[in-house]
Length: 319
Image 1 (cartoon, rainbow, N blue to C red):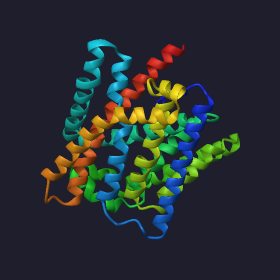
Image 2: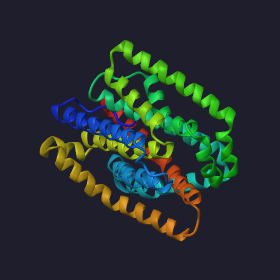
Image 3: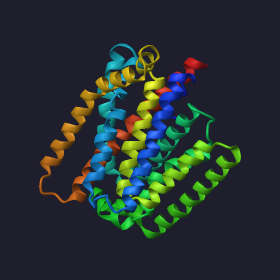
Image 4: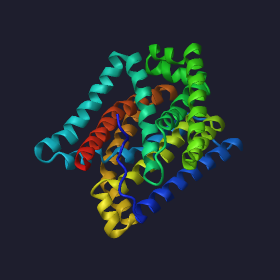
């Protein structure tokens, strides 16, 4: 699997937009650490999950539009709507039928998805970090969630499916923890030797987020305020029609266009999620969170497949 988006041509608009977005994500991560150290983040399950979903939903809300633009005609319409929804439903059903391998696969896919995104993002504003950086940057939010407080996640895993708790057994957690520490240290050393200081800074901030912030909050902040914001910035700078608007009318106009394109699918997804939660009124927070995670995981697979497809098409066009 390649990175989420190929770098756009380096222009002052692109560099400025991505630079501002990167600084914003770093500041938000730092603010989260400060709030955590001060004990000001509420001890709740639903709040960080809500942050991740409601703020993170728009970043994948235009996948169907990108597919429809890449594949013209009826095929594009079918692929961007029925195909995407069918893939999500199929994934949801597969996770119910084969919970352990599907959730293990979901974690691996998430690691590469997150890490490749940060690698390609930094490549758009400076030197491209190493593949080792991508593994470390993706492993920190996912592995950190598993190793910092596995007992906190155990009820969520059990609510998803009892067999999923095997992923949080002490021997598995120890292997993940050792691997996480090793890959982060190796990646940091690689980036320091190469003088890629933006990559070093990202690894430091992600490590601080994992170490200092409660795990659910750390992941919610990462997904909603780091990964999603950077993805939107990259779409605005490198994917038509938003990049075209940015080039002619400026970044603010491109962001407004992206917002208009994302508002309907985001609203539909949010309403569906709220309706699902209301239908489960009286269920404990772990059960509600488990349902939300299942839905999130189901749409993750077609999202990753969509951006991988866009990469392949763009690679051929640039060849």
